[in-house]
Length: 259
Image (cartoon, rainbow, N blue to C red; front, side, top):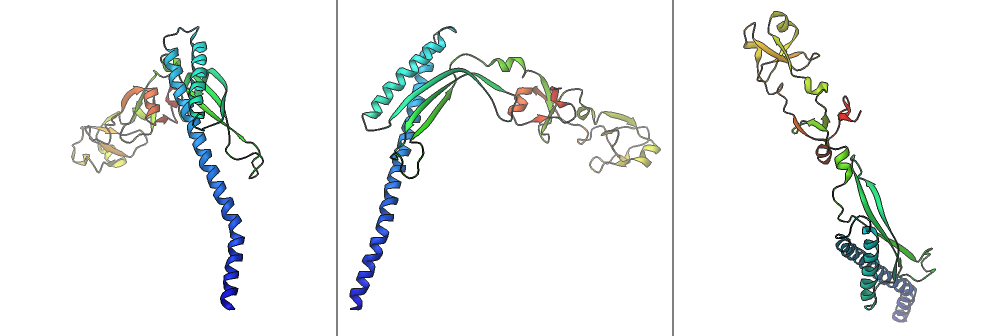
């Protein structure tokens, strides 16, 4: 009698858990199908972008946008038709916009002549199921045709700036007070010895009075030998665009030439 009761209890538990298992399995299957749909749609968009860029490369400036849009539409429809024959995504191209500009985050650079393609993809989940409000997803492709170097590079980013490659995180203009520090040259005397402490690295205390020494800045209380590596700052000249690309930010004093 106990064995029969135990078996009946297991059947009841299985009957209660079976719907949850079926729902989880169906949901997992729909998610797998959805991942395949989005991956295939992204692949079609990327390949269509490459095809349209190659097709529009020989065209002149007047006809380039028209050739690019036409080539993208034809390539998208052709590749999508091939994928749909295999039971793949229900997608359609919505629109193509040319001539967009995008500012790179964290840098003073702008990329122009961008092309953005929008596609509509139907989700794998059935309509009004799983509390899904919209059964359509949208995919985008952002690319740039062969139109030459951005005008932004010629207009702003050839300004020469100076950076300290070993320790610095800022870029400066030549007149910045940061670059002038370490260039104060004085003659060693008794007053300097009383008012300033000798550098612990180059040990200039052994120099005789009248020897040439350097102060790091007017506010510094340490004097150095002329060849002290602490005073000899090694800064490098480069274009501002290169400094920005390497992660340098404008100096808080001189503004890096932006003021």
